[in-house]
Amino acid sequence: MSDDRDEGSRNSADVVLGDDWVAPDSTVEKALRDSRAQRSLFSLNRSPLTRKIITFNLVALNVLVAGILWLNSSRDTLAVQKANALQSEVELIADVFEAQLPAGAPVSLATSDGIDVATTVQGIDLRQGVQLLVYDAAGFLVGEGAGRLPPLLSVVPEDEQPTLISNFLNSVWRTVSGFFTYFSSEEDLVLEDKLRRMIEAGDPTVTRVESGNGPQGETLFHAFSPIQQGATILGTVALVSPAAEIDAAVSAERERVLQMFVIATLVSIGLSLVLASTIANPISDLADAAEIGRDRNRRSKTTGRIRIPDLTARPDEIGRLSGALRGMVGALYDRIDSNEQFAADVAHEIKNPLASMRSAVGSLRMVRKEEHRNKLLEVIEHDVRRLDRLVSDISNASRLDSELVKEEEQEFNLLDLLGNITEFLGQDAEKKGVEFITDLPPRPILINGLEPRLAQVFVNLITNAISFCEDGDAIRVWARRRDNRVLVVVEDTGPGIPEEALQKIFKRFYTSRPSQDFGNNSGLGLAISKQIVEAHGGVIWAENIRPTEADVTSEPLGARFVVGLPI
Picture 1 (cartoon, rainbow, N blue to C red):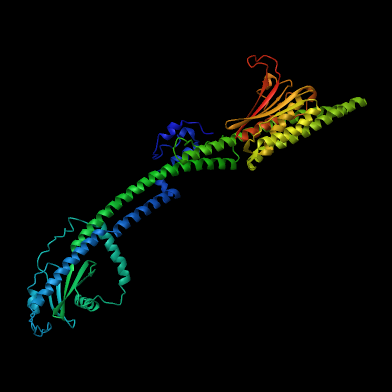
Picture 2 (cartoon, one colour):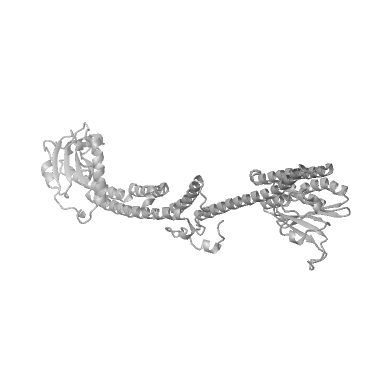
């Protein structure tokens, strides 16, 4: 059984780390200490529970990081700003071409009739990385130029802001995606043909901006704006601008998130190992202790009792489990000890009539007188009846434990039960000349319990009272409700209980009856009654009725048995 502990100490600790709450070596067996010594922090990887804890923590962390990367709003904001700026820029370039068109005269971009496309393209200043392509109405490239001015936003050099994790993941992605595109039947289109297809696929009368990827996976923005002479579309200006600053900003931000992810992963694994050690190690101790007991019983070696580690100081479910296991093992050993004591008592009680019968049978062979033979036969018959009564009572007592566990408790009216018992047994008392008084309250008293078993208790008490009473005595059975329990009292005006018997009257096979009644009772009735009452969470005791409680040496006026049951 687990030791009682102060509840304040149990609640004083809110966090359990490591093996702080593992039972000390002095409270466990050597085999369990050897098993604990073989463990280490890294041996936890052999624990399925540890792997589950780590896996579930990492899954939650990965979902969180994936959501952050997927719902990255900064890239979208930068992309919208870039698209708006590029749209304004391509419209201005188209306006430059439209401003040079002659009014009312035919114009051909392909033959530079009415406008010199090449000269106009060369006169437009663009930033580095930006490409300008001019197509005529038929979709032929008539002019092309590249930016020469430095970019307004300088991109941080890669060596000053390394993105090792992002670059590694990007290379892995490109490698994996390369397996799916390596055998593609379509050849990569050159920029001229790619832009031509994009112009043909869209509305040539409106300015639009589209984003895509370059040959190295970089982000590119494509802007298209028509060159119009009145309502006639003469061509299209196409502007291609890389988004290096966006890629760099997003890559740097993703790198910071991934770095925090790596740090959080390491911290999560470490904390998971610590958490697992506070769960897996104590559970392993409890399992090892149970397995040691199982193997010991399998080998039939009795080298001592099984000792479950005492983890009741833990303020969690494992502490409760340890206390429950220790209590269960303690109750099991108590039951074993009780059974051993019961077997010893049975052997002792059976040995007495057997010895008497053996002596009577031996004497029967030697006596010659008929009266002596008849007397010996009466002794043998008495001992046989005594053995039969002992065996019957012992059988009932041995089945009582299992029946108390198997039977289901039900709610019933205790006063109806007492009324039926007293009505039946009252007739037996009156036949013996004993006055029988019943004093039960009018209102019902409902309790939960095993009605047949409690009836056995009250029948036994009243029957005992009748057997000790003589003509002119009285028996009183009364019941009263007291707060959350009920008291049932059986009183008689018999000889009372000897003082030396008050402490032993509920022990097995103990009886204190006149010599003429010897052998007529097994001494198990009150022991069984006590077992039934305690199984219902109640108490039972016996006392003498005295003229004054102050004088304990006065002669008793009778005996009183009190049964207290919870309501």
